[in-house]
Image (cartoon, rainbow, N blue to C red; front, side, top):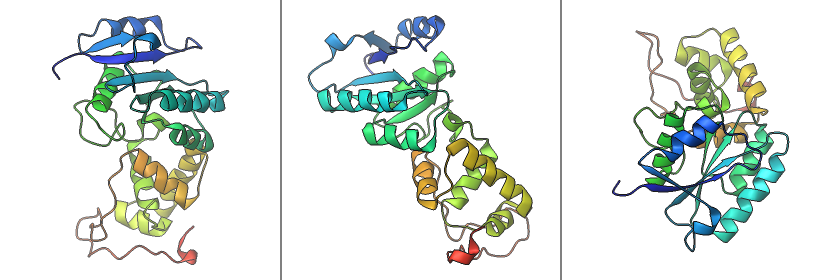
Length: 226
């Protein structure tokens, strides 16, 4: 990247630590600016927006206002924990990517540069040392993998077979996913999997257990889902 990326930090509730602010301001690849310095449509600038989980609607309104005034502005939303409805509200308002509020300055910088490079979402393409898919929701790697298969319409039993787990273990992961994402509906799981950049399941993808036969097609009838 030939020049530093302009970054607008919107932190009305002072959620960002002074250390994070200072670190971002001293990174040569970033250039922090104020709203008065934004160019016309906001092109080339990334807004780092800290959201108050107690008032997610305010965050959504703030994002919508930014996008209306500067349509080309890209936004990275920092938060600690959000419900599924709040997450979808922020996405509808124009959030381009998410990151944990307690992420390191290096991880925040990596995410900002990824957006500046035109990536559709935080995990949309390989970025050196970028957060793993699911990190922003507090998902473990195994929970993210289970989400990937559930979003493709697989039953608990089929997920267990594909990942060489017991059905009870899959059910536990599914309960954790419901608790962390505040949703269990298939269409919501599909949306979350896409936003987290989880690779779609290929129908011919083999089971993880060595010697397992070719994989069956996912069970999609209503009785197959547990």
